[in-house]
Image (cartoon, rainbow, N blue to C red; front, top):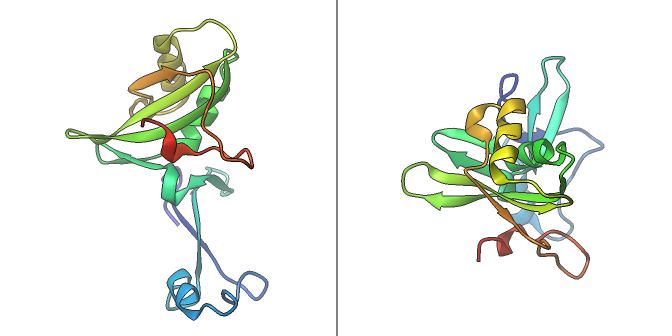
Length: 155
């Protein structure tokens, strides 16, 4: 795992964790490292007190911007801490200069401007984690089960 405060993939192992995918040895081999660690697909970071904090999913929630790895979940939590934000989803949008830009989609429950929300995030997280753009929307795309569909944002 990464040093304190840095994000990295979470891997676990133990007799009670995972022995393989039933009838699918190829998927099992892809999920387990040579020494038996299972890649959960989650991203995490250790807090200063040594507690592991899950901050998102590796496949959709890691934004690589300007050489930094930014967990979308951490930015979402910072935005949700503002009383004007009802819901949010943060994604990385391709950028020629930085690799990806941090872009937040926000459902506001009261009047607020993007600059105020950007300042709020910058006051609670490192400045490079603040959204470069905030897009206010009436709803976030969801599937029939109600799960957020981040891949549909920005289309």
